[in-house]
Image 1 (cartoon, rainbow, N blue to C red):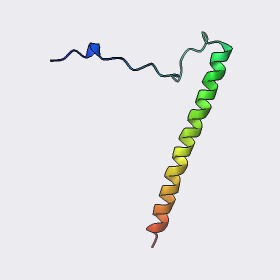
Image 2 (cartoon, one colour):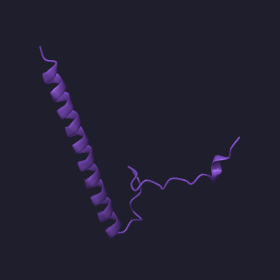
Image 3 (cartoon, rainbow, N blue to C red):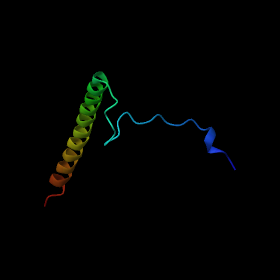
Length: 63
């Protein structure tokens, strides 16, 4: 039996949806916005890639 309490804990997420923002500074809020814009772009790229794969598969199997 091992004790998992000795394992290092992962860092907390940079942003949690619904998180209280009242204690963040203007600079921290601006940094958060930049982080979220980058994440949105990353998700849109992944979605575009999946759409491209889906379109290619649809055209390949179209009879």
